[in-house]
Each structure stands twice: as C-alpha cells, then as structure tokens.
Image (tube, rainbow, N blue to C red; front, top):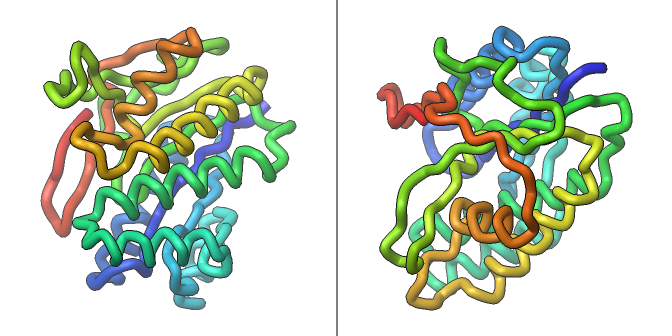
Amino acid sequence: MSNIVLVTSAIMARENIDRRFTQTLHTIESIFSKIPNSSILLIECSTIELDPKIKSIINKYGVEVIEMFKDPRIHEIKKQSELIEDTGGYIKNLTEIYAINKILNSYDFSEYQRISKLSGRYFLGPSFKWDLNEDNLMTTSILYPSPRFSNMTARQCTYWSFPTQNLEEYKTLFRIIEKWLITGWGSEKEYDIEHGLSLFINQLKIGVNQIHPLGIIGLTDDRVLNIH
C-alpha cells in the first residue's frame, strides 16, 4: 500500500507569492525523494484562489490540490483574526486545524497505509528517515518545554504521521484540539496546535513513536529557519 502526505499551505496568503510557491515546490520534491510510494495532497488554505499557472505547475508534479477559498469558515476565521488584531497565531492555528479536520473526515484514505502531514515551506532534510515510522504508532517530536503550561511540553506540528488503521482515533484527536483552540483562545495560556497535540495525545493515551530530531528543515525567505 502507498502513503499520503498532506501539505498545508497558504501560498496566496501574503506577499512574496513567487518565493512561497518556490519553497512549496521544494517541500513537494523532498517528499517524493524521501517517502516511498507517496502521494501528495496539497491543501491551500488561503482565502484567495490559487493562481492558475501555479496550480498547473503543482499538478504537473502529480500533486492533487484542494483549495479552501470557497469555504465560509476560512473567511470567518480571517475576519475574526482581524477583529482581535491577530499577529498570525490565531489565523494560522485555526485555519490549519479546521482544514485538517475537514480533509480527515471527507477524503477517502482507504488505499493508503499511512497519513503524514508536512507544513508547506518546510522540507524533509538529509537526516529524515522514513523507516523510523512504526506501523501502529503516531510519529511526533517534542518541541519545547513551555512555562506557560505547568509541567507541559509541546509537540511539533510541522510534521506528524500516523497509520490509517487507527484513523478514527486520530479524527477524534484533531476534533478535540480544534474545539480546545476555539474555546481557549485569548486566555493567558498559550493555545496552539503544538500544545494541543501534547495535551490530548496524553489524555487519549495514543501510542507515540517519538523521534528527535525528525530531520525537518524550515525556510523563511531564503534562510534556514529551524531544524526539528
């Protein structure tokens, strides 16, 4: 059976569209080079339709594209972020978790053995090893200890992976995280997907294969941002 990678992107969301597009192509190329028998589903979360030329090039890589710009919830999240003078955290986290939940609950994953997620503009580096994924466990990495939650760490959400045989369990996980983000945003504590993963993976007793570092490299503009 093959593997599918969800790439969450917002190519059209800001300025520097050409650079963001080029970096997303690097994301795609790294997946095909590092994950065997892989298909890619690019989820474009912008409120603006992808430029047809950009979409055509992505399709030529054999990548399926799902655009969210017609979804009212995506526009609602953007409006809310403007009302609260969001600096980027609210719209990024709420849009991504909503899109992931929508895809997990509507797309047919029956032909795939494993579902992975990689954020656009990140790529699988030389040290990434696909064979470290274990068949019946979720692959994640501890991100950092957080003083904003007592005795709590955050888990990396740039990349994660889980077996489709436990898909219903992970649907529950991400639904809970989305609800937690919506109800908790604006409190003194940090509410983001990273902390939600850490909190609810533990509460739901989901089996985890913890790898650190994962071998994920991030880019901002033309510079290496971080390596997980």
